[in-house]
Image (tube, rainbow, N blue to C red):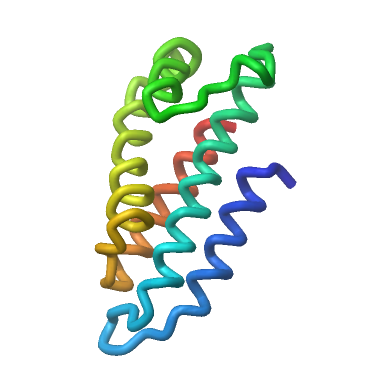
Length: 124
């Protein structure tokens, strides 16, 4: 199993710990942790792809801007929507979900997690 899938599965396990009332997460801590882990799964998927393309470990992206540049250089030629999808996941998972803790509705989080899985599958 790839590291990206392992991280994504861990994120789902963390999210399952969150108590739900009225289609809203009661304890945002688990949502934040799950979103952070899911975002790491996105980064792991990109890293795995870059390694397969011959990018050296020491040349791996270290910032969101570096990931954008790597996507533009190596992946956009395969799928022009990937950069936009990455930006969406960055803002939804990392900023809104993890950093700000603004995601509370169960359906919203599930939709974002589905988009994460689709992105990981596209990058494989």
